[in-house]
Image 1 (tube, rainbow, N blue to C red):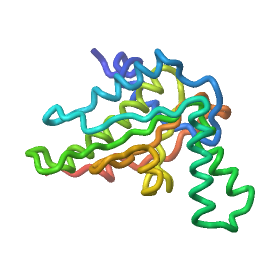
Image 2: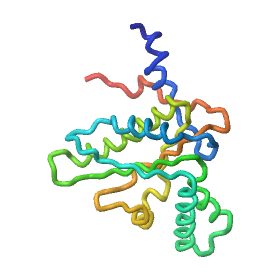
Image 3: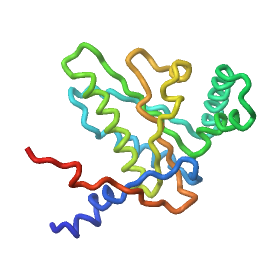
Length: 193
């Protein structure tokens, strides 16, 4: 098969994937069948030891408002003088997209699979989710922001010991044309041993 033939299939999909801004997302988002496909593709990530060192938290519909209210509460606890605009940003954080997937990295310590490999597997899950979303015609954005690192948010989401947020993946339709970003020169990143 020639390179031109490949570029119209999987390779073309990989070479055209790019993130869409969460701030510029709109409906429609993935429905239940789309989400099942997207998450199933995510689970095809490399997983040394068959540990499934990740899990998912879905934020759809009113759940996005409920977590936003909690984000606003955290902001006001940290900055009681925060203005209305800042509070609304937190309230609306997950309302930027129709669906947000929280990917949770679940590390099992003290086994033969290094923790680093388990964390990398969660990152591969995130990338597979981005690619699957793109394949289905959606735009997606993998973001962490402060809420991925906040202990109160982790507790509120029910994260257990050894778990942390690998990312929040926003999925929807882009309300603006996507722009290609500048990529590094490939030759500057490659050495031969």
